[in-house]
Image 1 (cartoon, one colour):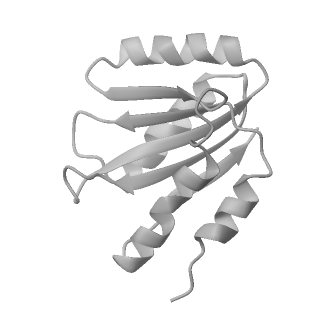
Image 2 (cartoon, one colour):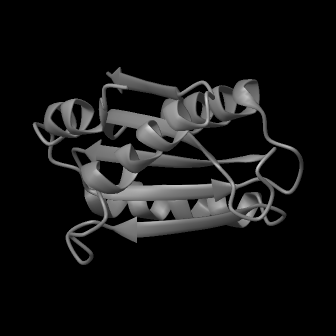
Length: 132
């Protein structure tokens, strides 16, 4: 089976990513929840220029998904404030915000590791790239 991880990773490294947001909902998360949650967050924050999200099989419950979203912004400080506000409004969800500048090992290679795993498990890859 051909691996697409390096292809996607190569494509995604063309962008300068500022943050990675990881979201674990407090209820069962399926493909639609991944898309709706990601799109809603991205649309709410005007300063996000580019985003890519992926639904990853959860290590705690392999029938459930959690979400990773890479964000490229035109105002890091403003976006961080808005992400923290989103986090405080969604207290039931586990939301982790990672500054990629401070943790450079998080980014394109981290988010694409799910692609090969999904293919090996014969599962759909839930992802999208959004450019505003």
